[in-house]
Amino acid sequence: MSMQVFNSLTRRVEPLEPLADNTIRLYTCGPTVYNFAHIGNFRAYTFEDILRRVIQFNGMKVKQVMNLTDVDDKTIRGANAAGVALTDYTKTYKDAFFADLKVLNIQPAEVYPAATDHIPEMIALVEKLVEKGVAYKSDDGSVYFAVTTSTSTTSARARAARPTSTTRRTWATSRSGRRGRRATAPWAGTRPGGADAPAGTSSAPRCP
Image 1 (cartoon, rainbow, N blue to C red):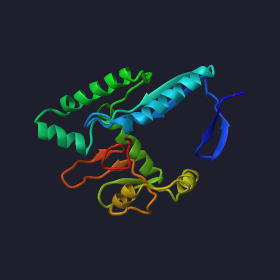
Image 2 (image 1 turned 180 degrees about the horizontal axis):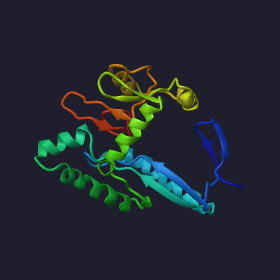
Image 3 (image 1 turned 135 degrees about the vertical axis):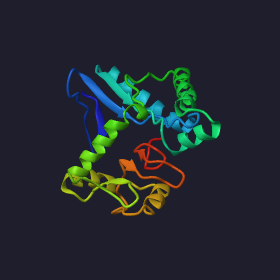
């Protein structure tokens, strides 16, 4: 019997089948490295490790990509307060994160892209989303997915079945020019005392 997983898009249990080379490709949220990761963060990473091992047990290979958010309001604020360069500030918490993974015997991901290494690509992608009409720029400079467009209908329907965090909803509905409370931001505009930031930062619905 093939491995079965719950597909949150179709809302059904379906067979897990590799697209190519008998390899399951995973993209998972990594840490925002402004501080040491805590037990709540590692709950997610432990789950991902169990998922990897179950996939491997079922005879498939895994290629996992886990992002590292190393630029956002908190990292910039922390680096400024410490009087050090952003890269030096975040390196402390990146190193601690990888050390903790080893202590917990969590299998490492195959790729760990850092946000600061891919800013031009993120900007180009966000601009393309706006050009295609599936995202729009708000008054404060944030860019939101246009969840009412036909290309976003399926994913919007899936999101509608999930509860929305009160904290995120309260902050997001206060943003100028946001169309609908379920719109999420691939790029967040400047917050007071902050800086423009890609998705995955403290300025937008983000990874832990």
